[in-house]
Image (cartoon, rainbow, N blue to C red; front, side, top):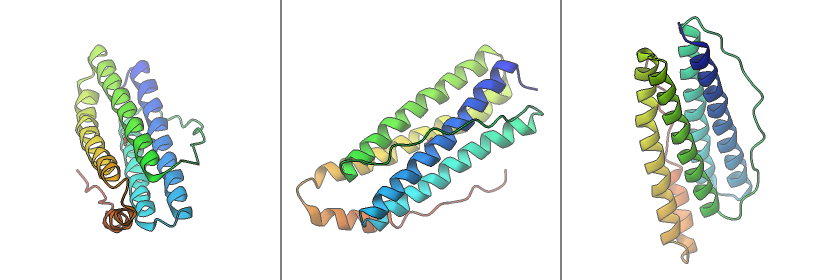
Length: 169
Ligand code: FEO
């Protein structure tokens, strides 16, 4: 059983995760058009991760006997100035999502909803990893600002990332 307030907040986060998936797919399209296939592939994996996040919340809400209410997904940005601008926007977005997750934990604590609080701890940990991996790419892009050859090496490296589907818990 979820309180009305908790149900509404979790539905809002489902929308935010689908928006993230949509944003990263838009970034994948940008990289495809820029002929940076490794960057595009990394963003496709990021899209899969965000869809998994949304579905994790979807299944939780549904499993609690509450109602999942899907809302319209906002149209994402489609143009960026450079690969660095894309990853800086990604970092900024992930920091925003971390704030949303923290606010959800606050709501769970206010509602004395221990089960939801425990479920959300997975997302708290995930956000630390997400911010760190994106910041790593931002730092590498800054270092190679004046070495275009580095971009192709990083493109090859990012292309190695694979999506690890979560195992059943
Ligand atoms: Fe689902 Fe990247 O946060």
